[in-house]
Image 1 (cartoon, helix red, strand yellow):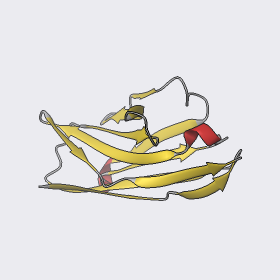
Image 2 (spheres, one colour):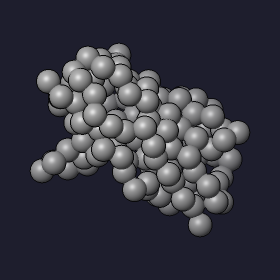
Image 3 (cartoon, helix red, strand yellow):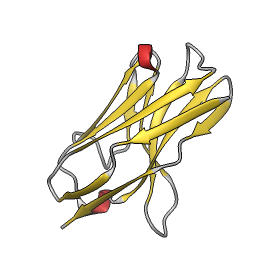
Length: 115
């Protein structure tokens, strides 16, 4: 079994920063992809950023230059540093782990950006 536990969400003013963390536990494969998705109220879940085991990362156009994804393989943890936050970044942020053809999701953490 795999468990993902997110932390770091909260309320921040526009222009501020937050750092999300997601720790994976259980049967974690050496080769995997970890990432962040988000879902705003009334909208579909969308990809924010993903990072492969060896560090290759991809970002949604809407967050390029503002968000940075990183990971610590020794801790099976992925991070999302979010800078220059905007009200439209308000959403529930979900951590995701893809390995051996299976997706695992965290419970989500709320990020609210006030204008």
